[in-house]
Image (cartoon, rainbow, N blue to C red; front, side, top):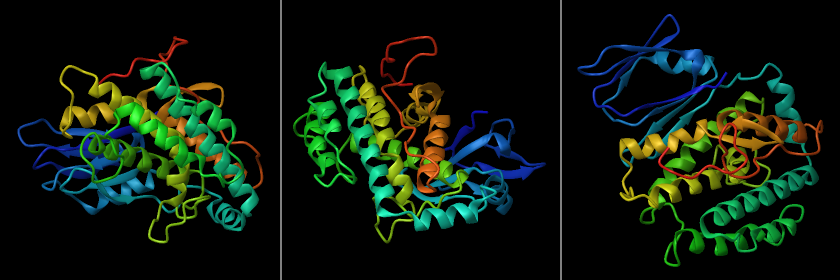
Length: 311
């Protein structure tokens, strides 16, 4: 079953739990309820939202992730379940004991997939992948040549113009990219926890202040989907620069896109779980390959990539 992503962005909204249903009460609107078991990610993006303790505990019990946004509308915190898998302790031990060889191999596959995805985005909008597919074929175990950074120097100026600089506090469209990445990161962190892995222990990212290093590793091949959506939105007649409600809804709708992962078509939100499960198998020495996305979103019955739009 496809889990829902629910965003709360209306002033005065009150959240509570009744019979394991999330109760949403907004001013001047009818009360709405959603089964907690159907929710994958809850995004709370208004400072005047109130909730009971049971909202957090019940959603976590059902395996959902809760994202709390700050005044800039970007996620400021993330809550994840601690007991999302029945063999969690065993998998945690295997993950912690995984050797550098298997982690370097995983990072090689992740980087190569990311570069192919970036090449697909450029080909879609620019007609050429700027050589990123060839660079992807040259990625070695652990990416010691830092081809990921080399590719970025080709990718960003071609996608958003020669003056664009990708950094968190940069001018638009950095704000749109930040929001899209943060929500995808939360969904991947949830998938990692559901697979029985520790989000803190990455295969490449090792920042001691980052509790989601493994999520940052695994999300790399999924970042270009956000880029694809943002580029498509900017190409519209009324190009969005602010994180208003329609813009956020368009970015969140990425989870419903159909993509190819492991040779099969799947909604993106389910593909995250397939990728996390394959990473778990690799880190516990039960698998040698990763299940990663391949190409841009496609229509349910189409062979060609979908046009990027506002969702």
